[in-house]
Image (tube, rainbow, N blue to C red; front, side, top):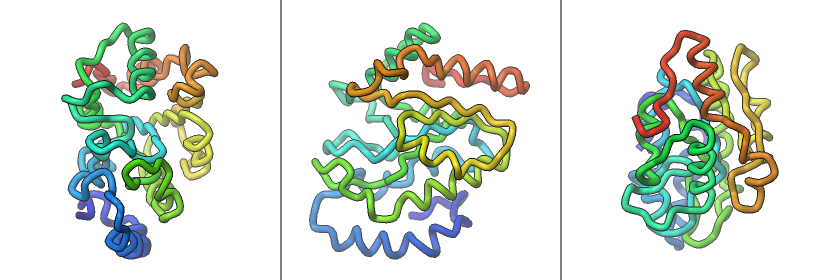
Length: 213
């Protein structure tokens, strides 16, 4: 179902019908389940967005993806390695430990956890990269950057979308991706969580409770 708060974006009239038809014809198991596909947008409407964290596509392992970038269901063990690295940096940055991999508490505080591709075939990372989802991410970035916001752009894929952020007094933090292949090349030590909270506080806005909210 199209998320009501975002339904005005041109994507939903122009691109979504074609993508929806393509998904219906795909015989593979599609992740996440349809009811969770727009979870990130449902939990964080435009006016609530303080921070944007861009992911690439959902986890391709059944049971992992829940519609929010990097997040998994609270009972999921072991955690995906990128998420473990995010939590390691959070611990080093703010001495915060997360009880599980469920990031919905962040989303409810205004952290938009948006994948640039919202579906993936089971076991086939990047399998829907050319389906047309990126147009939605581009429009979302343009929408939320009408007001000051913080953008965490982890890795070259996220950084390639920076041009869709409208000019403004934003905080833009770029670093390596938290994946095991790149985390040691600039993600570790980047201190994104304290930088976001320092920026929000300087604006007179409530910081994010990264422990879950």
